[in-house]
Image (cartoon, rainbow over all chains, first blue to last red; front, top):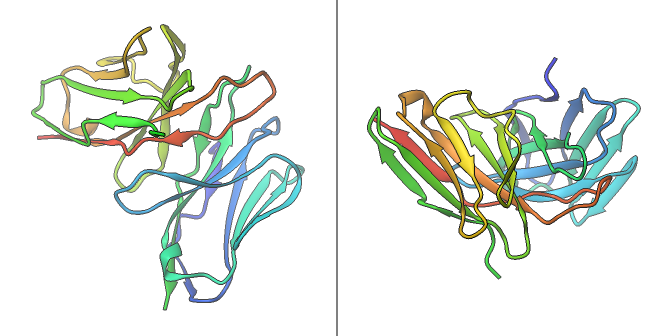
Length: 113
Length: 117
């Protein structure tokens, strides 16, 4: 079983709709979770971090965490063509303050005008 | 307010040559992480360093790869006798010191694209 799993996609969503991205992880002791966006040929860019169960909203983005189900998701409301990118879920498996992030393989999202 | 700086952006090496990738962390950050991304794949952890110390190198290939973060100067990822399978994007990230139990997102540099011909 992979430590962090995502559907690789591609996921196609019409402009203006809600895009839903999902991620599961295997280490029950994980405490920190992140979503990164990566445009083709570019570096990963942090868009959300979440540490507690529940929802966390930032603009059009909402991260959801359920530690009991070992599940983290990202919702993008009012999707725009500029949201088309690969979204990487990351889980911190470090100990003693280390920020050792393990990434899923990424979900490729396409927003159709 | 420079972010994580990596150079070179692109590096071409012939099989058997050495590749040196450099990374300067964000100001105030004392921890450096190296990741590799093969084409169409996710990011794979390679190594985590603090100044003059390798903390976790569990993701480093056993041979040909080494990393350092000296007291002065950037962190260096060194690949000896490169092979075509080493062609990838290598990303460096940094973070500040984080107390045990805490967390801080990683900030990535623009990466070095290594091509082995």
